[in-house]
Image (cartoon, rainbow, N blue to C red; front, side, top):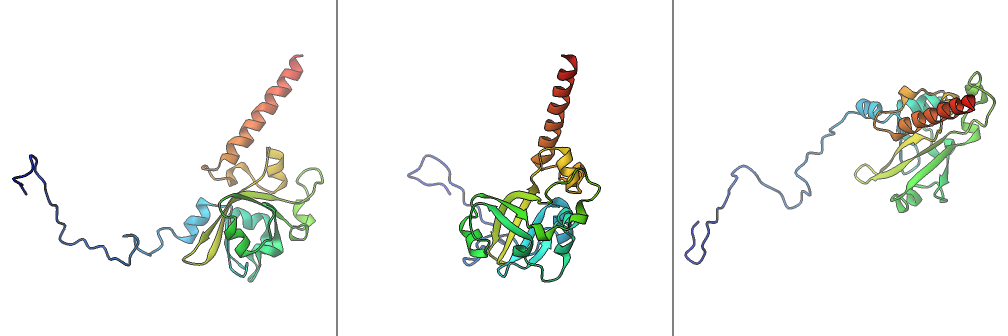
Length: 193
């Protein structure tokens, strides 16, 4: 379209088959883009629970650490306590504080002491997880994407985990390797002195 009043050309682009509905917030489809199995492989440390705190999905590594999470009707409040932030372990409290990170710990009753035999010196069998809790408003679920709180390989072994259990995108793997490297350098320095 060329206008007499303007010194430039304005073009109008018309796409005949593209329609955006007013009531549709996004042109994306509602179909799931990722299967639950793929999600579990990508996030081996995740827990999904509903408003009644009933766990509906969990990662493969979480299931290996806590086999009782597989029980039907298992509730997150039966297995875990919220360590940080200091709030009640309820659906509403989590939604109110969802902008921060969460640390949850297993309850003493959720891990059998036999699960920790032959994994190093006796230690408190509490396992902590750190991550983010996201509210899926559409499904009305809380998705907790987390990692185990471990500082070194021995901590990982005591939990019954291996370095390969941690996903590549998780910084925990690098932290553990850096810790091991620093410990090895320190021991070498002690030998040289």
